[in-house]
Length: 199
Length: 248
Image 1 (cartoon, rainbow over the protein chains, first blue to last red):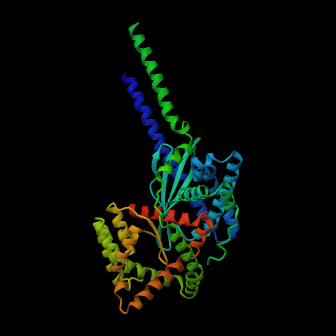
Image 2: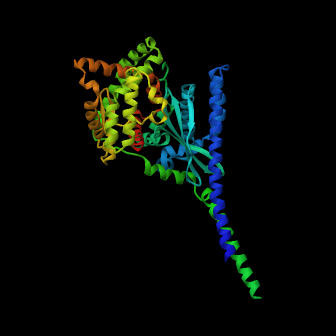
Image 3: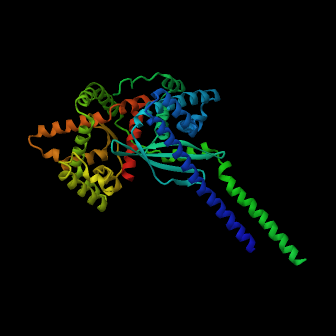
């Protein structure tokens, strides 16, 4: 009996410890990647297009894009699409997400990142808060990661409390509730040029 | 015989325990599809707001959109071309410091005594040693740096008052009934309201708006580009952002 108790305790502690250890590991991993991306951005020599390409190489594997594509539609709308439509949506949405990210990369040139302690929400879910210091003001950014099949990946990012997934979710819900799938695809395929002159 | 039996039983228990332990360790990782798990999380957490005045709000959203592109943005770009960034940051600091009485009151109404004290200290330090607030010497003290911008809408939220309907105001942008009430209250706590003649106060508000815009050019454009349904996106971002501010 005593043996069994000891064993159970050891097992329990073992899993709890493993979870804590994982959180630390995923924190380190994210920090390293983000810092590496920022270092590329701060390199004075190479041109912006090259830098963007290099950053994408680092950042892309961190995100679970297929999962994000599902989450922004939600169960109700995702399951109403045929497998072909799902694939089409995923491609278009991920395309848009990436180009939006690339557009913003050079906004972060002079910024500094402060990391806050990670919060494990469950053994497979962790929130890693950070603050970007921009023009002397703090912008709170939370990376939300999930562990599926052994690997930690980002499924959502919150900037100043605004979740990317939540805000796309309500927009797509609006389009699909008021309109049709065709409206959805038309909106995603329409070229966006509004941002031409920002400076 | 007896000892062997007990031993065997212990071994069996241990096998069961190990099995359970393995299940517990492996369970959450494999048993649940991430989509199922996270989807329900987003289903319950999304903040919503009633929008009975949607036709009006949509119209005002359009009006503000035009005002930005045809009036505010060109003016802010011209201003940016003439005034260097350090000066514009100084102007920003000046107006931020002017709003300290409002933040101080909002802190007190939320029972945030310590933060109210910090607001007061920062206000006095910046107004004196910071040349009327153009500089922020108070920021050298970490406790006085980056204080969350409290307002009366947040105080009302802390008292348990919900948003009420969503409201888009011309020029002022997205708000809610609750936050509009807070804003109206805050108006009386702003020194600009008491400047004579009143035109001077209006001009000062205009400078504040143009100056702020000049520091954030490109952000609204990026928002428009990213959004698939801009009106809904703005409404949703407003609610999420206010929630974040209230929680801070």
